[in-house]
Length: 197
Image (cartoon, rainbow, N blue to C red; front, side, top):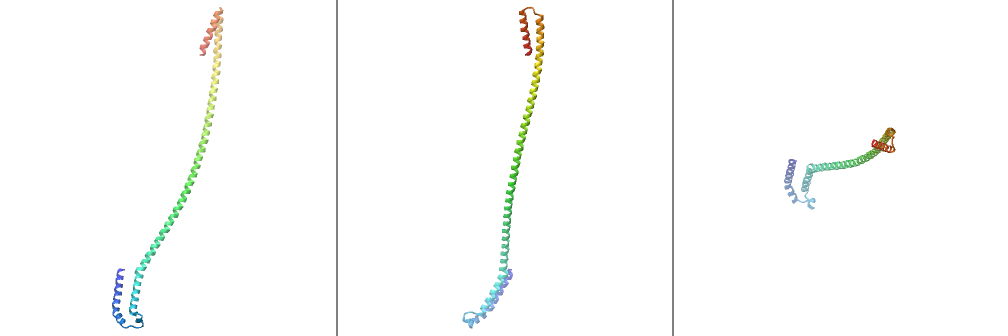
């Protein structure tokens, strides 16, 4: 591009130098256009120079700059659209995340409530089972105590009967005098008291 630009400047300079003697001669000979202070050859040369400069600027400066600006504008617009898309995606993600958090929290609350209810039911059932087992054990113990009491009573009756029989037979054998009777009864009662201990 620099090569074309230097060639163009050289061509403009050569044209201006070649037109300079003719312009000087024309300045000495004024016409209708000269009356207004316009040199038509100089004006034409300047017009051609302006056209060439405008063409050079259009071809090698304005088009690349315009293309660069257009590309940059497109890139900026693309970046803005991408940023808007990212913001929208982020907003969508945030709302989805909040929805999921709400769902998880409600599910967790439901699970906790269900676990509490199940634990309460299990506690109630365990307490009932324990109470039933305690009542059953108490009843068994009472039955055992009643059986042991009955057995002890029968054993005591049997022993008492044996003692009475022994005491009676001893009394009948030794029925000699009232003091000895009294002594024998006291001895029998002592023996019965020791047997029960």
